[in-house]
Image (tube, rainbow, N blue to C red; front, side):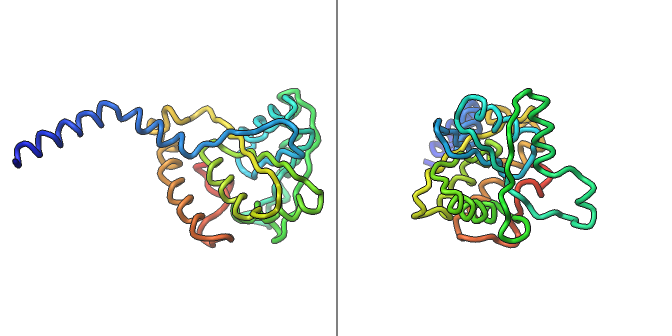
Length: 218
């Protein structure tokens, strides 16, 4: 009986090892949501690596998904020197020139002097959308962050009547099909389920979960 159990275990292990790519790829795909529809009142770029998220938002803008692009505002890690660097809107405008897609960008005011997490961004946007009477919003962030971002926004926007969708930006280092081959990909997809679980436990900012742009591996 013991030998039979070991034999079956080895067969299962061999199958899993031979199909490891299938499991790793599908694991990564779980965290990605891409369901934008045309006619949105606004596209919002969650603060993070502008090199990927801004071009993605501009692609949606050029394809007619919305005529309005919003940018969230994160709290600076060092307010004493933050004035030495370009603002979110300045960076976005420069990128729009490079990709030859002229667009106007609007900054979403922060309720706390700068968001510290995706929860904070969601609350900032809920207040802004209510004021601006926005009823259809497309969230643009990194692909691996889209499911958690959409989940967070739906918790905060519950009963608001605002339609929420998401679209993910790709990068040149890793994706769902090769993330285990780079340090940054491994770090991202190992941390993402932990972050997701933490966000499931709360409806507000948690002190040890920081926004995406404040985590250098993102």
